[in-house]
Image 1 (cartoon, rainbow, N blue to C red):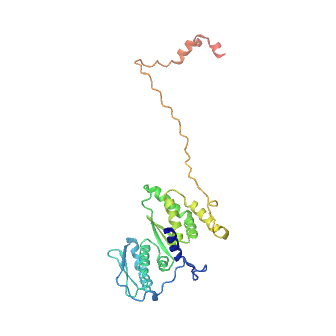
Image 2: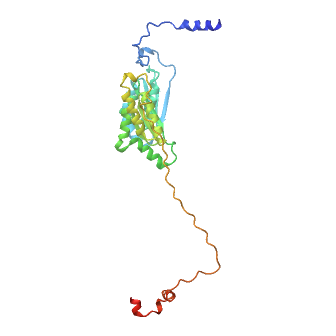
Length: 283
């Protein structure tokens, strides 16, 4: 009886929902409007980040544009050249509680050498950022530089291909990779970067993404598994043939010195050639 009661209790909440139709997009992000949060915030939130010395000149030129962009969202910003830091904080005019986190990402991107026209797009809905630290993934400095260069490719072709396939902006600078774009693209981009630093070339992921892009166009394959279409790359360790080095044999020690090398005359005396006359010698 107890089991039947629990089943009935579960069904009690499983009622038909006439308002929940197939044309509703449950994943859609609704636009946040000032009417949704009419009153000011009770407390002030602030974030600060440091920037390197070489970014000081650029930040001074761009800072009026940063102030104007954040003022629309009710966020104040401060550039401290003495400490080498940038600070953002909410004001009483702020209405979007998530805007301060977007402003925090903005100053992070600016400190990572991302240009302002690109970094300011982070304030838009549906765009996020990811700063991937790659400096401590490889110990050898030469190996690290070589693998980081693979992300760029010849004339930046690999980087352009990754940006087109993931629909994300990508900036390789120093020990970090800064990325901006939709959440799904950022997830793919992070996987490509981390695998590249683990000695898996980005071209394998680029091929896989291109195949997925073509498969997504076919509505028949929407409910099927794509594993049979995707390439499977196996790591092959090709061992070079080892050269067989023969160990030198140990010489037997003898107290006597080696026999002297025989001269030409000695050899002629042994063979009897020395006693022949000139004519037979010539013959």
